Image 1 (cartoon, rainbow, N blue to C red):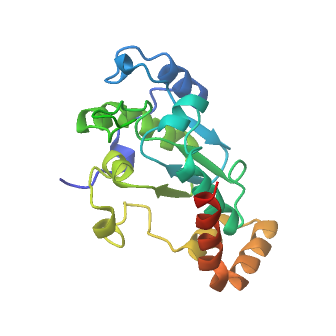
Image 2 (image 1 turned 60 degrees about the vertical axis):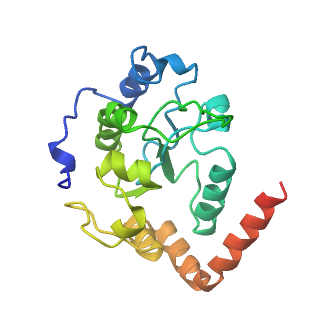
Image 3 (image 1 turned 120 degrees about the horizontal axis):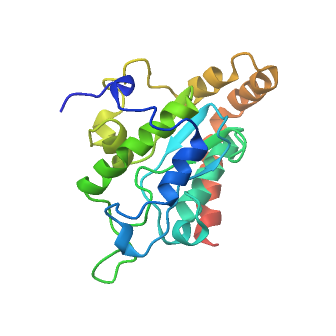
Length: 212
């Protein structure tokens, strides 16, 4: 499957992010409409330059109506904070699929199907277009399938960056986002000084979550 060009996608159906969110919340004929789960769209700052695209809501997200608020979300916030990002001010977080796919065989939820990913994809691109981020972070195979229309997140890393986008390290992300921002540049330098301690920060976050 060839790599899509972001700007060839059919966007501009909506004039604002609020219109996209309203359309999503009013959906009644989407593939998961009969699942009895809630629409979960986003959290964070729509003016942020870093856009994180996750997979689909889980049980906690379904209850609270925000993406990445369960255990994985707590870990994500720890990682962002370790890199001097405020999860509510410096980042905008959304999903690839906007309802929780109900589970089977006693499981609370399941991985979204190809049909579900395809259905919600135009809304994902509308959000990308309207946010117009400097950096996009895809978290997981479902996000890669939605945006890149490819899977195999490990093999994708470092290969065929999207036209107009490059793969960046954590330090390079900081540098890109800090352009023209003296306060952020100071944070970048502080982060670089503490970079060697990042593994310890993440391990501490893992221990904290394990005992929560």
